[in-house]
Image (cartoon, rainbow, N blue to C red; front, side, top):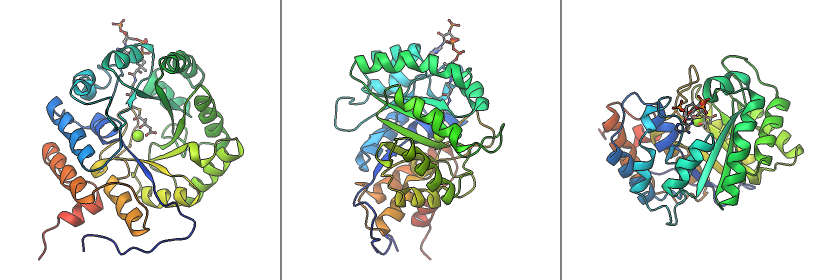
Length: 311
Ligand code: HMG
Ligand code: MG
């Protein structure tokens, strides 16, 4: 069987936007550094598979994330003025200078709801991260760039343990209010469960951020990512961050593993009769090719199932 049986569910959207993070969240966490030409090829193959938004790389300290030190070289080979949106992570003004020089049109700032990750990932506190982001967003907006904001550690934190919903909503709303058009809710360590997801989306709604401006960013560390995506879908969210083949993880977070695999989400959405624009066969071929470069099998259950030998 190469496609799910389609059974639609009342109340769900006709289409969903997939925000592909494989080249950034995926490759930032790999021990193997992928050659620049293969990163470009990865993005081109994702475009050919129908992905319309692809987070390509990040302009962070190259000594912190050497895997993405070639950000400008990757972008130089891509058509940044074409129809595919290619955002990049930018933490500070130095990063914005580099991104603007590379010709990007979409950036993403990435804040943390907790002090542990603000320190480990940004060398800041929860409060001082805003001082770093504020001039980035204001200058980016003046230059006509679109800004997305991430808020990480929304469902639990390896240093702090449980994270209060009020803390997440407060930090997330402040990040969004700097001037972003979308807030991506990160389950950085993959500990969320469905009712927790529904509750947090409801709390953001109460604070004035409805599901139309939210994206969900689930890591699959505890095998909950797809269930959580389904809960978010039922709560009205229509943008999901996923990575081809389930690559991913934050190098500064203990125990963080891959993102929800794009293929696994696409299979579920196809089964629900929801359009994504993604060609599953081409995407599986791409993830299989990348798994070969990384010399290990894909984490995606759908990639494994669709490439298993037929006996
Ligand atoms: P810092 O050390 O506080 O920076 O790092 P600084 O401003 O004090 O500068 C120190 C030196 O770094 C200076 O060089 C700067 O020029 C240089 P010097 O004058 O000493 O020679 N520098 C830079 N160089 C190149 N590009 C830059 C840059 N900035 C400073 N942008 C900083 C602060 C934020 C830069 C650092 O902590 C950093 O690079 N962090 C990035 C960490 C990262 O990439 N993490 C992974 C992405 S987040 C994630 O995966 C989570 C997410 O997926 C959502 C989820 O899952 O929840 C988004
Ligand atoms: Mg992530």
